Length: 313
Image (cartoon, rainbow, N blue to C red):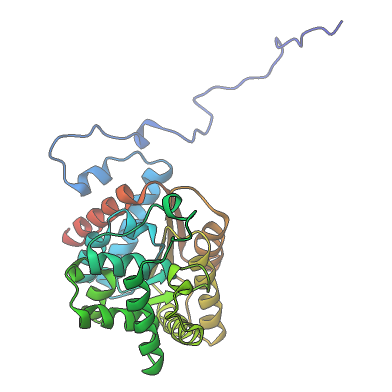
């Protein structure tokens, strides 16, 4: 029969001599009623995200004060959880320099502008083949894209101009419309077949390809200026991380010095591509990458408030 191992001769050491990863100096401070956001951030524990989040805020504030770009790449879910007003405010205050969207972003943003609501219940209409068949969405967006191709401009600019020209009721809540008014670049990066407007009779594949490729070149130009700046990827698990990595290799290939940059990913769960293509690989030769997990509707307003507090300090 197997005998239990005898622990009596185990070699020990003093806890006073051992290195410890957690100390009371790193503990959080109690939260008080009426605290400023900056005070709340300062009270966080000096562990994990409690240490990383204030550092990211500081880096963004430093970039803004140094007139370095802060680029935001985002998935459409950020729009769907109601964050347009927060992002528009950051554009007006000079924090966000440019925005990159996937194709779904223009769908939800345009519907917000047109009717003040978006996001259908797919399960209720998919069986009847009615998913994505909203007439006005396809007509407005595809018409804007086709016109943009004729005028040799990017997809994001074309849609922003169309929203303003139509003077839609809720344009003040639209990222594309407000960015166009402020002359802030919005680039749109389309994967053909992923968006509902690609099934509409008004779609023109050549126009879509031309305008989205124009936007990719604009995006590369923005990335070429990221030395000392910040790139935030919020809620895009595949498309924008891939596009960011391709843009970064293009600009480095062309001789642009983009080594010392800050990158950060925000999403509900951690995915391979954002962690690899946004956080890790781009900062191997300099800078710093961050990865935060949490709900956009909580994390992004907190980030915005911390940045604005930091800029006032």
